[in-house]
Length: 293
Image (cartoon, rainbow, N blue to C red; front, side, top):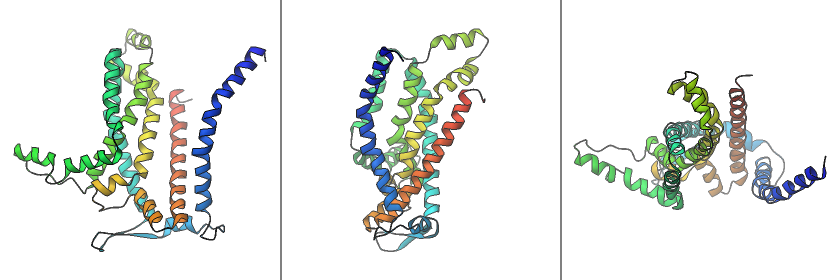
């Protein structure tokens, strides 16, 4: 190793130091504490009861009137959360991918304007955005008022899974567009021209060139939308009118009941499942990018 290479390596290590400290304090340490609470009881003795309880125990959901609305196992609650999160992620991908492509092919000034417009809603408080959708979707809200004037009649959306999906898509949509856009904006246009010169039509260029090159951005976007969607709880409470539980609601409920160890166990299991899914996605994505080697 030459002196220049050694000095360059030391400089890179110094530059990575702030990020390493940030990761240690705000990622690794919380994960360690979560795992510690998940595998201990109230006396901080080692136990696996919290983990087995997730797969065997049931959760009762009561309305404001005290009447039990739903009794489900935590595993069923998680599967519902995963279903809604997957639907929201798919909708974000279907809508966000073409928008990211349009942004990437626009003029530089137009790109900056479009990115700003996408990010403006993120400057507002998450709770305010959710309350805004309550006003829009409720039975006497803006949407039904507009449909009534058009003679289409009122549609009951608030308090349904559809309303929750709409809230998720709206809140996490920028996290899908921006990673894909950042990859497409750096794409070499000469590759697209070469593909057309070799006889590819527009669909073949999209399938064989654009999509494989943008796949890292797609994976990042899917990850950034899916994970918060699975663990969300405020959207389901407000747009779902508290009529059904998601896994985030279950975790919040355990914290309210001061059962921190079981809450940590639910969070730990959720984290492990998501990490396994992310690892599988990364593995198959890498194979696809390499051409299935």
